[in-house]
Length: 147
Ligand SMILES: *[C@@H]1O[C@H](CO)[C@@H](O)[C@H](O)[C@H]1NC(C)=O
Ligand SMILES: *[C@@H]1O[C@H](CO)[C@@H](O)[C@H](O)[C@H]1NC(C)=O
Image (cartoon, rainbow, N blue to C red; front, side, top):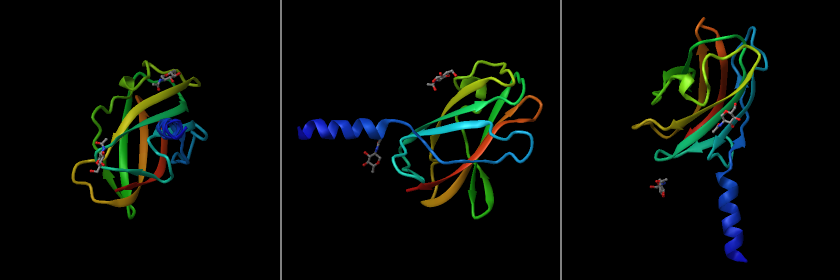
């Protein structure tokens, strides 16, 4: 019985949970992001340890057609935006078949690893996907902690 319970807990923590986020687009793109799921993130704000790579899924409605998608991540630390290296910033490699069609719903799937040498701190992460005409296909931010 105890063993069963422990197993059940492990399964639950491995499931992606929708996290609380804020869209950062002020014009023309309201409500583009339907949900953001991060795994593992059993409690919010998400706490990331340096040796763990999290899976991030973003379900969004494309605002317009685009043949290319470029992802960018920034860490915002006390109001200062710092670029966050990504192994593959091409959104067309992230579970999306390009070109995207405006009005359609897509699930962008990527990973988030803590950069080497990052200090322990709390910060806000801003994640965006930019289309071929410079438009934001999505942009959102969420708080996290590096430990
Ligand atoms: C990450 O590091 C912590 C502390 O060193 C360790 O307990 C944990 O098992 C590691 N996790 C992975 C996935 O390597
Ligand atoms: C990939 O995208 C499809 C269609 O948008 C979605 O149903 C599926 O859950 C996504 N897969 C992953 C691993 O995110």
